[in-house]
Length: 84
Image (cartoon, rainbow, N blue to C red):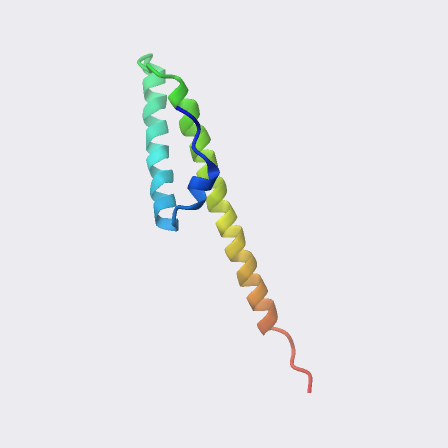
């Protein structure tokens, strides 16, 4: 199994992205439990889940920063004083 591509994560809409992040967090918690009890059969799944979660969180943060930048840009253009 290969790592998922960031390009695939960027194609998800915001709702799908949030759902996938939540799903991966639950999966990681389950994998941690299996690891602690010594029943984790495929330890590489832990690394894959962490990697994909990091990618998704990065995409989510990029979108937040872009939205903040757009908000700041629009606010600065409307706050300019009008010269007469």
